[in-house]
Length: 166
Image (cartoon, rainbow, N blue to C red; front, side, top):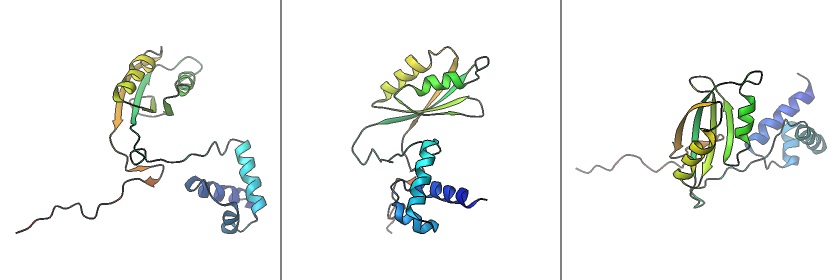
């Protein structure tokens, strides 16, 4: 593997876990200079290898009430476009956080957030289910997040066992 390719992969692995990485520290870790790291990151951003930077927030701890749902969507693929056109349409809804083509009994997995269960349910029934190619949906509400994007969100309690006294 070429040295430049190796540096790029190492940069990607590191900033995926810590997008606020200090370029100087990253250069030292990779055995190169800060300018090289900055140039490689800029080029990967331009080429859309790096598509964006996100902050992972525990909304429960922030005191914000949000309902997260995963919706499985079964659909009829469109001639010559497969699932792409309908997936692009679903991506354009602001409530939608992610859309994945999946294997199994359903075709797409849609992740979205709303303020209430009713708001999410209305999105599914009024916007998603009414799309021409959609055959059926199954909605799963996230009750608690333990780990998200590789980060553990819940802290371990001192002891999960009940105290038993004689």
